[in-house]
Length: 159
Image (tube, rainbow, N blue to C red; front, side, top):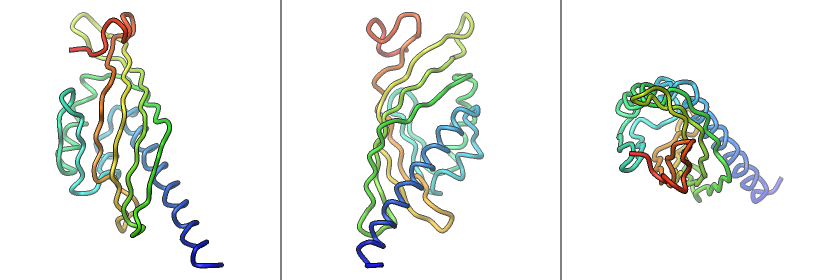
């Protein structure tokens, strides 16, 4: 097998591993924002940046602490990660990716559970570590966080 073919196959395998990593992230979120599973998804110095809506958390401990509290606010969620575009760095050990997120959720509202929608764009950076691919930076560009009943045309961002 030629070196070029080997490098192309390695690149495709890396892309598939990163897709599986992002799927594990979505599953951990949908499993009550399981903080311990998040530890195996982010690098030790990883950053989760949810912007003004959710805040920025640096390092595995801070990320896990954040996710440990999210389930009291978002009591149920189903994350759809769609349209991935993943680029593997020339070194084969770093990568970038973008994903659209479409999410149905239930929040703990003041007068009881409230259904809602979230939509946005994830911009990620990944790093190959001895244990496998990890997210080193996740940035969420939130476009919609709307109540189900009103919809995003009337309320694009819940307060």
